[in-house]
Image (cartoon, rainbow, N blue to C red; front, side):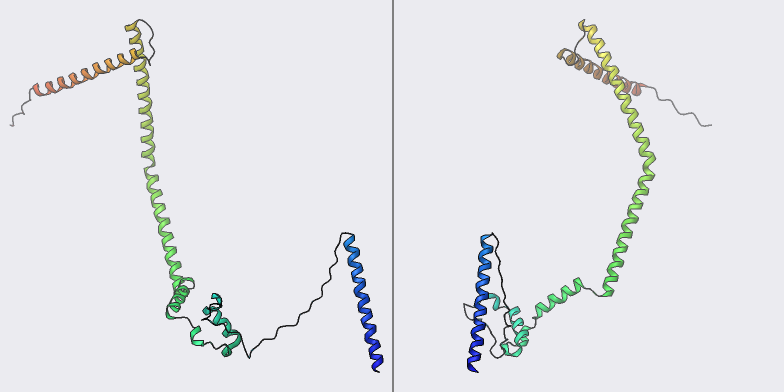
Amino acid sequence: MAASMLCRRTAMLCRALKGLSCSKTVLSANSQSGFLLQTASYNPKPLKLNLREPYVPDKDSEKTPEWQKTARYDRKLFGRYGSASDIDPASLWPSHEQLDKIIAEEQEWHPPLEVMLKNIEAKEKQETEKRLAKEKLLAANMAKMPKMIADWRREKRETKHKLKEEKARRAKLLVEARERFGYAVDPRSPKFLEMVAEIEKEEKKKKKLMKRRLKEEQVVAPVTPPAASS
């Protein structure tokens, strides 16, 4: 019986070696043709969780990484090993400052229903006030529109009239310059500009004399006595 078992194992070993040699032949053939045939078969066994001696890092050691010294890692160890991690559950709770911060964040990002309704009401009220103010401003501007249009038309007429007067005055100055110098003068020439300055000076002098004369006439004019009462 032992001999038969030995024969069987020898036959199995031969078949395995034969299959291995065949796979090597196939690989060599594929490598020669430019292709690579790679076969992998790996089925690892799951790691066993060691609950008797869990790994608890030494926080006083310099070799221990900093991320293993944090409270977050302590929570992870306690959640995995429980009391076997030698971690005090009370130390895992947040401090008073952290609790106040958590409560503040909760109230900010998840306020109660009453607060949400009040915020919505205040926002709607603000939007309504903005809309009413905008409508009021629009109505006021529409009421001013006729006067604004009339002022614009008046300014346009005055500007057009001033341009017309300036054009006529310029033509008159050109004619006067031609009569004075005997030939057409360029309006940009120094002679023309000097003549215009003299004319403007004379006109200012005449206006000043005219104002003084009118003032003197008003002072010298006799005052009419009031009618006698009956």
